[in-house]
Image (cartoon, rainbow, N blue to C red; front, top):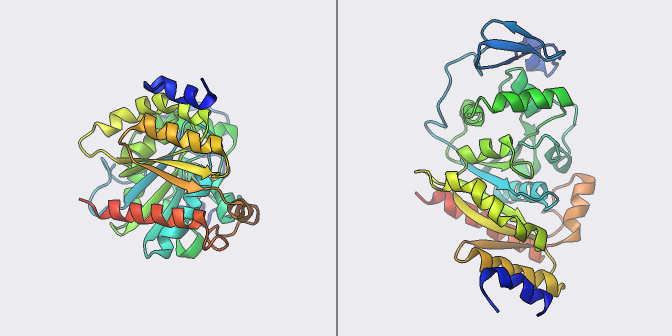
Length: 319
């Protein structure tokens, strides 16, 4: 039995409000609200009594209400699959096709800001959330006219405080997106961390479309069962997101990669599977923080990304 045959065998074949926040000058001595009525000092972690502030100092929203953007969540169990790179390219591609796009980084690694060339010192999702700053104040210019909300630099304690808060605030992301006042014309591309994280679940809770990003290798194929278990509760809800699988960075000169694509197709059955070819110019764009679509015109990768953008637009228009 060949190695390729082995691949097919398993599938049956032989904080407090500070006015200075608005100027992006944040003091690291705020408080983090907890739903038990106490607050935590962000500097030393000590608690003191008193009701924590509401998310925006206004009534909490149950979910995305009224006119709402289309939310596309890019997810993966495995790291290093090119999720942030794809999020950047899709944001530029959709904007070029006439959509209004906001790229949102929910990964504490803050990688998306490198792709867009956003200054790492600027306020992002992490610190803005801890200090109850509205996300409209942290929107940055992206490629082709899109906008970017970076996660921003956070230290270890701030990451811990935010994650602990989000486990008790399941509608945190829905509330922030509602407060942005985006219309149904907008598409929000959400980059999530690899693995099963609180940020992933926040994104899945509001997603209209889920793009599962994988590379054509055995490691990604082997985590599909784990991913199925994570996605199941969201795919079973009344307003379930549409789920598409994307094989990213495919090298057609590699027979093994092509065999892996076949293995993915067999494993997924009738589930949609898209492919984005590998292109070294995309990696070069990251190195110089330039638009990845500026340099790859008339390439397989460019066509793949545009096809995926058109698919997202078509899905957006579906009832």
